[in-house]
Structure formats: C-alpha cells, structure tokens
Image (cartoon, rainbow, N blue to C red):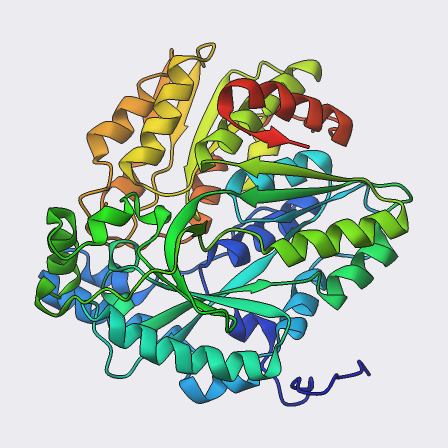
Length: 470
C-alpha cells in the first residue's frame, strides 16, 4: 500500500483519477490517444454522442441551458473537491501505459503535436497538470468576481490535501460559453515531479533514455496572492487578447450575449502578475524537479519552449514529412486536425503528415494557412475542424477552413459531418477516426524516430518557427 503523507487524502478516501480529470480536457484526450497509438489502436472508443447534438438547431437560450446542464452533470460536486488526490491522478495517468523499456518520454504542456511526436518516437507522453471542473450552483458567466470567490474556496479545499500543486482558475466565457456560469474550471499543475511519475520513469525508462519537456510559454494577466491559487480572466485559448475582456470591449459584449449574460455586472478582479504563464504552462518547480531527477538517474533532459501552438504544430508536421520520406513514402498527404479531433495511429497507418490546430479560432487557422503557404505543396489536404460548441467573434468561419483545404493540389476535403453543425455542434474524438479510416493504407509503419533526429529537426524549425530547444 502506498504510504500517505500527513495532510494528504489516502487512496481509500480519494476519488479515482478518471472521475477527477475533466472529460474532454486536452490532457485527458491526448494521453488516451497516445496510449492507444503506442499499442497499435485507434481512437474509435473515445467520446460518444452527447445530448447537445439534439440541440444544434434549437434556439440559443435552449441550447445554452442544455450546455450548462450537461457541464454540471459531468463536474465534481463542491464537497468532492476535498477528496481529490493529485498523486492518485498521476498514478492513474501512468498506469494507462504498459510496463516497457521506453527509449524516452515526453512530458509537459498539452499539445496535439506532442502526441504525434510521442507516437513517432515510440514513447509515452505525460502531462504536467490536469483540468477539473466543479459545479457552481448559483453561477453566472458575467460575474467573474463571484467566480473568483467561489473558486478560491474550492481551491482551499483542494490545497489542504495537496500541497505540491498550484491551482489556476480560468473564467473564460469566450472559450467555455454557458458552461462558465455552471462550473468552475481549475487547471491543477504539479509543482514537483509526482511520485508516480518518478517511479514510472525509474522502472520503465531505458538506461540513458532522454526526457523531452514541452513548455507552453504563452502569458496572460493573472491575480496571484501567493496562496497556491491564482485567477485568470480569459485565456489565450479563446483567440482573444486580455484587453478584449475589459467591460467596454465590443468583443466581450458579443461573447457575453452568446453565453447568456451581459456586461452590466462584469467586474474584473485586480491583476497582480501582468504576464504570468497561462493555464497550460509548466510550473517552475516541476521543471526543476524533473531536471534534478534526470540528472541523478543519468537521463538527459531537453526543453522545448513553445511561444505559440502553431510553432510546434508546424515543426512536427515538417518532421513527419522528412521521417516519412526517409522511409520511402511520399509525405505528400496532409491532415489538419483540430482540438480533440485527432487520431495518431490512423495518421501513422495512412502515412499522412499531421498538423494540429489547438482550436477553431481564426489565429490558429491563420497559423496553418501561413505554414502551408510557405511549404512544399501537398497533393491532398484533409481538414477536420472541431466545432467549439460556442459562438465567439474570434472563431474561424467555414470559408476559412475551406481555404485551408484548398491548398491541396489534387484532393481538397473538409469533413461534411463536422461542418454540418459548425460551430455549435459537439463532435467526439472518434469522428476523426471514422474519417481517417477511409484513407488508403500506407504500410509498413516507418521505424521509430530517434530522439536525436527529432531534436535536430525541432532545432532546425526553431530558427523560423520560434521554438527554443535546449
């Protein structure tokens, strides 16, 4: 039995990891996709049709109410927060990977390209944190100060039993819509390498195997009073800027109307850190702890600082193209994935080049357009735009997604099933699997990429993509 330190919740009283980690959150989906791809499986079992699919054409108030109810059903109850054990969550994550002498490991910020990179290398990917949502009984999308008060109390309960984490609360109606008034979103980030991670690495890394740490370097204004809980109003994931969350901003008024609120009660809490790492960043203590552990155990640690998601997506796509061509494949068929719509195994099986868009905002779609404009043309381009389920002035329209598909020389495909309910539908991860299964096979799978080759390719891309590889 695992020894439980003073102040922590024991296994018998704590919630299981799959109950704690938010369904559909980036880290959860990416771990699941990576695990499946490493064992030669696709993502056909990930996600299911939600009740929201019945409300795509319903009036906005009806659809918003359905979204809020669905979010509340999946969230933890406030009294359950004290039962969360972050160490047990880490154990749940590593237990999904089989015991094996892995030639390396990727850790850090959630990013779809990290899953593709891990699969090409034949190594696991481990997140540096996880997201959880908690029910907010009398919540409102347009009352951020009330959200802060409620979230601070919840964070206090969580921190009482988990001293080695930092809790970043994110109130963002632009990316979460009506659910931001029904639940509180908490990004829980480890401030040190969890014991479960250290044990997994010690037992499963091959001698001298490298560790690659990916760090999302985007910043955002936050309120942090040094008590282990910080508050972030808005998010870079929204596709908006911090100024757009000012009460006089036209973008905020549009966002709040779409989410069922208004700006009359919008009172933004003060900011103490104007440029802190945003919710997907890595805690400095986590990196220091990982560096100390790898140094003691003879594993080199390399860090990749990612200024924007597009940089890692483009570098990984370029890396895949070279890797496929060295294996005798064309490397001329591209799939543009988005959000949860990805399937690393089907991409490998079809011999395709993956480019991952974090979400359907104009900025992320412009990123793939700029990369395509400067790349050698692809014979085919398949596009899988994930509907965000919300309306926002920052979203890309279907014409912009069609323009991405238009870069294909012979095949230009935008998935009609996804486009039908865009942008308010809810589409499971398995939709990507269904689409990619129709691609022709291109077997055998190339030999696993070596970490040294991957690092060299990322450094090459860093010169013009902005990646910093150390």
